[in-house]
Image (cartoon, rainbow over all chains, first blue to last red; front, top):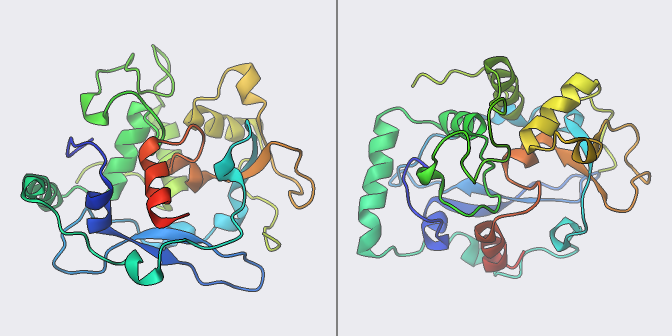
Length: 174
Length: 77
């Protein structure tokens, strides 16, 4: 949305690595993506750890159609663990993208602004949609989860949702 | 999952409407798919799953993007 390029796995893996969460007696275990711990890589600052504190009491029950990705996996990733952190070599055509991200970071963009913007525009991250976010056209954009007048979140709702998702108060001023 | 406690949030209709609104599931036939959790363990009907609100921000409310599926495939998840 802010950078304006189509999603690409090599670019994603340049910035993120797969991590296995610590497994306790009561937890089955989980994997998540984390910003690559490399000071040479400049990326949009992410959220603090506080957002996870209340995750156990922050849930609802949803009914959906069957989907393979909702089946609890019994095994870990098929990819060898050493390859989780392998940094891909990006071709020269990605240099303007990396430069753009550096400019945005220097300008004060944080993950909170990204989440706030997605919620305000009613665009769900990582959800299938026909167009890139950077081509957003407004209230009737085909990528919105709800379209038309009256479907924008009020400021109070936006504040509450961002606070609930990120564990901090909404402030969209960089 | 065994340690999953009683939820503190999203117990009132007003709070559930926030989740429905976030998903874009405000129409009555979709809205009823989201309900407060009471005792999830061993009490989920077929097709029901527990949805943590942070999952919503990751797009795990269906349909999932082809890019995310590609990413999962790349790691063999």
